[in-house]
Structures are given as C-alpha cells and as structure tokens.
Length: 174
Image (cartoon, rainbow, N blue to C red; front, side, top):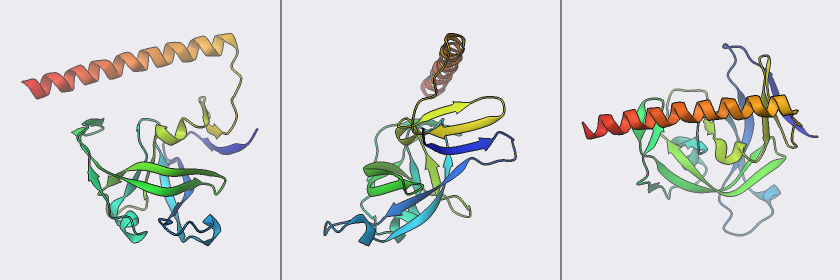
C-alpha cells in the first residue's frame, strides 16, 4: 500500500501536496526532458475539478482558455470558469495525469497555485478520522460498521447539497 499523504487534522493546517505542472509537449519528447515547475495545490474534496491559477498556466505556455457554459456552486455562490487542458500534472512525481482539463483561477496574492479536486482525488483512496486525513494509492478496508457510517454520512451530505442547490435555484428565479 503506497501512502501519498497523511496529515493531522487541525484547523491551523492547510492540506496541500507538492505537484508538478509540465509545459505542453508538441514534440513528443520524454517527460524527463520537458520543463516543469513545482506547485502548491490545496486538497479540496469539495471541488469537483482541479484548478490552477492563470498566471502559472500562462508561465508554462498554456494560453488556450475556453469559457465554460456550466455554472458551478462554489463557496461564494454560482460561478463559471475558463478551462484548459494541461499536458501533464503529477502528484509527488509518482502519479501522473495526462491531458487533464483544469479550471483557470484568477487568484493573486496567494502562496497557493490552485486546488486538487475530486477529478484527481477520486483516483486515490481518501480516509479521514477525527485525527488524520490520509490519501493513499490502495484502498482502506472498512468493516461493516464503518461502511454503514460512511454511507450514512454521504447520504446526509448529499441531502444538504441538494437543499443548497434548490436554495440557489430559488434565488436565481426570484
């Protein structure tokens, strides 16, 4: 079992992991020959899609940004994002994602370069108890009680999200 990240859960901690963004590879060179930069990405299990700041993407040669027509619920309300496809994003230089569509963030004045969303995180096994947050490459085996608790927690979380969507839709139609 390969452990990628395990952090103590304190409110003062920001859960982030070192990632590497590679420049586009039009000449099909080996990935060892392609320029890359390290990124500090926030782990965001509430984000559906990975997002990287626009200034970092431009620095690495990505300029083909497409405006999305999809409205997404964010912490600040409904929003639309530009997107682009990145040639390669690797996590801890061990797990690589190629041709990954990412959202483009207009963040500035922050030490973070974006967020890792569930489009990437869903490829790993994530476990959180009251003390730690863990990401690993192979599953954690849950007993029947833990499975039931997790199903109950996810069902409750889904109901909360559905209510929030209805509230936002009602606000838009009002």
